[in-house]
Length: 247
Image (cartoon, rainbow, N blue to C red):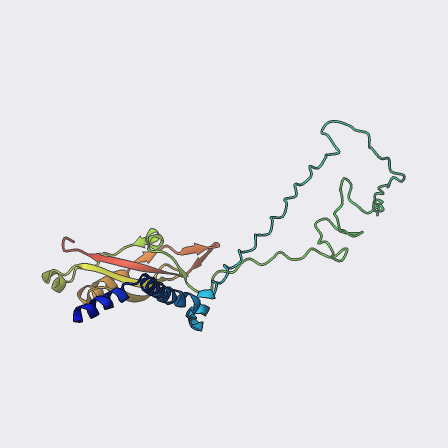
């Protein structure tokens, strides 16, 4: 009895229309699952949509072209109206010709010197060698005074002063400086008077052991007077005295 029941059940499940119906249902479910995402699409976020739709800014406009350079005007060559060593007739003859009038010569005063040519700006009755603009018959002005000599001493170089030296006294070597083997140069500045004597002798530099001997000798020197514009003048110069051990 159980065998018949089992066999009957298997025969009922193996009917062909049930198999076809199950296949159709399965295919329909699968198709619905595929079509749902295609029909109901998901909207994109607004921020994402805006960022995608923003276009880049346009490039800056190109700089304007430089203005065109001003055209260079070539100077027109000047046509010369005259040609050297050639005479040419004028193209246009003027209607009126200007006349050049020369000034009349001055009247003859009749008081000139025979053979004289006169002097521009002179006056009638003038004398020979007179001053233009002076009073006729007045004596000529006195000659200008001679230039005066300098009021103070004139500075001259040492070489000029040595050229005018007439008498030179050699200094005596101090024994103390000689025993100490001291040598060197003593320099003075002095004023040479109009008579050629040494005045206002002042020390510039020198060793103390040599200064007195050099001073005594220089005060005895004699110079020829220095002349300026024909007159003797006082001069200021430098005097150098050398001391050597072989002296």
